[in-house]
Length: 305
Image (cartoon, rainbow, N blue to C red; front, side, top):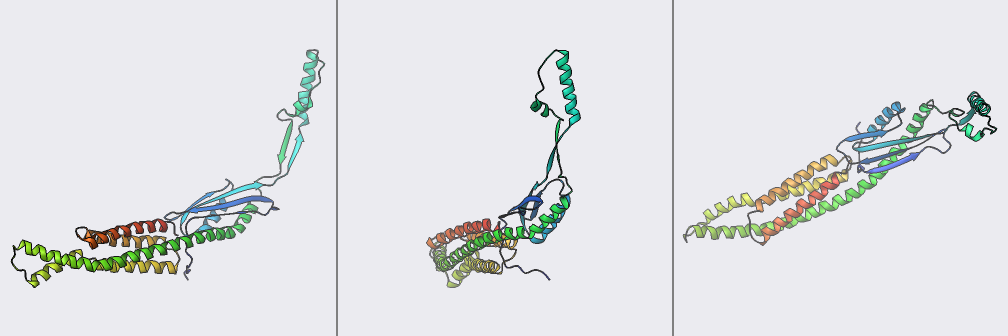
């Protein structure tokens, strides 16, 4: 059964977790995500974590859908070190010192601090190796669910903000469409009167029949009327809001819907570009405002999962 999504997620977020203070292997793991067309995983792990990387990628793919995701693991391995004296090397240096003192008739004594700093005289052996890697894998994987949950909480908070902004944007687009619908009727009347005057001028005073006038007016209306575009604009806006209400993975679908909205705006501007009169000019201004608002919405949608 497919999972039903209702939460709206942004692709922008950050979260981090740390191992327990008393853990044998100390580490911190952080995850940061930004927008991307697909799920793009980048893991920065120590070189000995190949097995862990495979498991992390599988887990992230199950829980995240889109975004450029960077995961960084920093390991601080707790170890015990034991300092040892290499008596054989030190004895060789002392013997060489005594030989030089006898050879050159010198009475000075060797400085112990200087001798201990000679490479090879002292050594520190650490008990830490890579034998703890399986324990590291287990500890990291145990914390990953809470880390992803924290990341999704941050992405959900950002997603809620984006959803509010997009709802406000759709309201502004609907207001523009309503104003255009009101202005449209005035434009048709003005175009009809201009057509009557133009035909009268072209026929040098010969009366123009109402039938001829209506025929020409119908052709003009077909070319310049924006009623269908306004209807489709409202339909797309309603669909957009319904998608916000439903939630889920919206980014790609909303981007496509905004392209359709922009297409309607371009058609309206094309139809009204040659028209004159106050109402026509105002419709053109509204069309430009619609395009600007759509572009703002597209910028917000680019961040949605």
